[in-house]
Length: 118
Length: 117
Image (cartoon, rainbow over all chains, first blue to last red; front, top):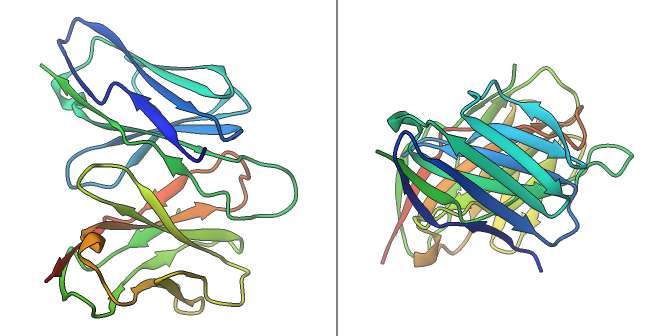
């Protein structure tokens, strides 16, 4: 199984709502990532989890709260978002560091969640 | 700081022709990795090809090859015999090889490739 799944595919929420995005992989990967992508722009890294611990937070506002309950699952909790947070949210996973020198360790991406904040 | 530059915002290519997508990068690191991803209109990022900074041979994956010129800091993607399904946005990305496992990808701005029948 070389697939990263994301739910929901689409989400519309108001600025006072609380919602969560879910990402799952069963490739045994130990690194998982959240990206935000605005239209016609490249993805921007938000968070990285490595071995279920948060290792990178790219100065993301606290209204975005990541969670990694286990090595297969990654959540992004959303609260009090702004309209400018509307974007495609992509999850990715990679094998992670297994020791030794640099190697491919490509990131596998999910199909994304298209989020609209009203 | 790392930087990836893709100077072709859009390209139109006739079906079955070869196409080269340009990518230049800037880094002071000796160890790094270069990736190309394809993003169709559906949104999913699809990994195409990888080149490590210490790899002596240019990478190839099926119809995709990477023209890696280290001294010029370029990593151009070559797609042979283009197909209609190749129409998509293509991103070049670089990974800092010094932070194994916690790997941040720096993406270029992308090239929108359209294949004409």
